[in-house]
Every structure is written in C-alpha cells, then in structure tokens.
Length: 228
Image 1 (tube, rainbow, N blue to C red):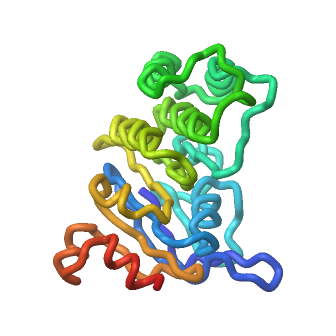
Image 2: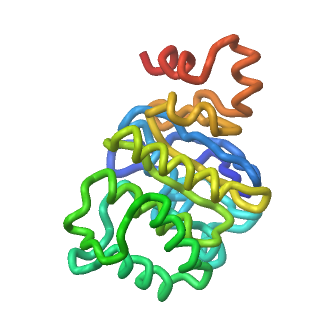
C-alpha cells in the first residue's frame, strides 16, 4: 500500500528522515516507534502528502503521493487543529464538508463510546478529551490508510483504552493503520508490524511476532535496548 525507497528529508542543516526504505502492507496495524525527535512525524507528514521528500521515493498504491492518495489517507497530527468557536458536533460537520468519505453516524457512535457530548466547546475539553475527539473525527473517515501521530501521548489510562478500542474498530482487511508512539507497552498487544526509527533511520522493521521470536524479546524490551 505504501512503499518508501531511500526516503530522506532535510530542513536546512538538519536531517529529520534519513534513507528510510520500508513497505507498509494493506490490512495491518503498524506501530511506528521511537522517542520524540526520531523522525516519526516527518515520515507521517510525507506519507500524508503534507511535506515533500528531499530525495528518495514514497509511493501510495504504486503511484506518487498526490490528490488521489490524499482522498484515501486520513492523517491525525499531534498539533491541535480545531477552531476555538467549534463544538464537538461542529467538528464533525466541518469534516463532513471537506471529506466525502466522512461517516457522520460512525462519528456520533464513536463520540458516544468516548463519552463526548456534541454540544461541548472544544476550548473546554481536557487534553484527554481532545485526544479522543481527534481520533474519533479521523477514524470516522472511511479511509484506506490511517496515520495517527502520537494518539496516546499525555492522556490518562481510561482515555487510552477508548482510543485503542476506536483504532481496533477501524482495523480491517481493506484498511491500514499506522500509529506513531513511544508508549510501546500500550501498542504491543494490538499491532501486527513494527518500525523502529532512530535518528531518522529505520533500524528494525517487520512482523511483530517474527521479531519477538527471532530476538527472544518483547517489543517493549527491544525498544529499551534500541533507545537506551
């Protein structure tokens, strides 16, 4: 579904992504792992078509990232992107006007599961509630590729459980989910494949179960080894 060959992105004299070659397959959940500053966000922004690579190639369904791919890729950034005047329900209406694949019924169902009221102002939401809203409005798109950048960061255990449940609801044979995080223990049980990024480079990538068997360690233990 997504293929990268020698992908590189530099900002002035800083290299954010350095020579990454990975393939992301259809119907799987991927964990994009690494500490803050490792290059995860830059990689996701290139996959979403928001940032152009300095060199290398990134293809979606064997075609360059562009208008066609953007219609099938749902990206959730780490930055807040709701207008202050919006209500929770208004966020859904805003998305429905921009994306033809947005499912309002699914959005309302996700809000109910996450205990978010449609009349609540986004400016009054806690960080955990905002995180749940971001995930709900992204997952409510009938996308083929979901890119969730740090959806579990800075929120409590209950909110994380709601978000993980929403992610699993979106998973299927026709959809692919990539979740970036440094909270490995929250993701190990639900992901099919992992990609470890360190200093902008992919240092380990592959099927999670095969990696555990080959190395005799859990993904959490391997994370500590790679980044210690």
